[in-house]
Length: 448
Image 1 (cartoon, rainbow, N blue to C red):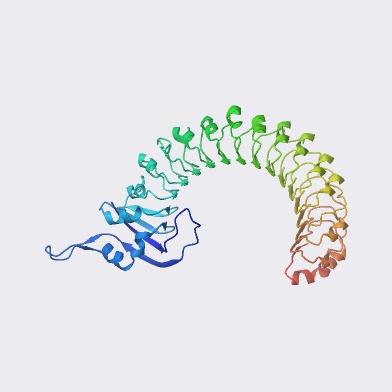
Image 2: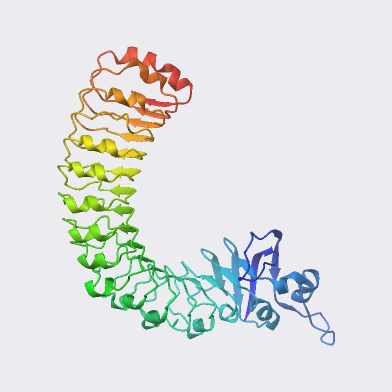
């Protein structure tokens, strides 16, 4: 089979054992590989390939092939010269391209791909392939494989011999069961299975070296026994999986650094979560959580905590123990008071506490690093004067409160870029607008 495509010619790279440097693009040219017979049948048959091979001998040493946003047309003619070159390719990306197989829809992977036995990266996304040939197992040097957004519901994916594989993306592949060969991918570190109607995830337990697992929108619960075996897992994403709880066995995953379980139906946070002492990122927005147990505040490595849009009415004073927090989302809850112990969160850079029931805010002057502060749609009666001490603040939103006066010193904010004070109860708002005209002239976005 013969390829007709547009490629970017890239200077040869060192072997994978050496550091890859960004390749220098030296040519961009349309290359057509096809036999052009001369008028006389007695004359020797020549090819454009022969001419191009002569003009650009470096193509024989090509190791990286990028075909992004190019047209690829495949014909049934065979060109062994093309296959010889493709065997040296180590990285192939034909993601999101238009591919034309003799003016018909392409539903299978071209055979040439499986001749490139040295590739370590293969992306075949968004082509709607329905089958994955057995020959995939020939690409034994693969480390990165992306087959996402193909309908593989009836396909037997064979990759048990891809022992070096570290990244596998099977998202949006209409899978109801995990491929049998998955358990043999002992070096797999990242597995993406988002948006598949999976019936179970038992095979995942065999991936002892897995570090990142994405199961967003799979509508499947992790078997408690299985999840406990992923002891090297660092990142777990399970957004929109209709979870009713955080699996208690999660406590066995001592290396977990990030948990994302947003848009589920989680009502409580188990005490077992406190055993994950490396956890620094916890995303639980849009759940049904109404209470934070005291054990929760033992997660002292947390840097980002997102509890946006839950049903929390009270923040325990122990939140002051989370001294490494730099981003805190507690918006869209029913919180009426921020505990003064939060003053200990001196590394906080972003605080989102809007859409609550706050009537008062403690002295914020300890938040020296704060850059973003959102307190809109609360019940604040007074402007928190300590805000004026926050020299690093670039974004402030106090709109839709009950504030009656704003200090004129607001105009002296040095780094502010976005200031929203609209929909409050200030009587002399026109006079105040005049006060802030200088800020607008200096490029500050002011909304009154």
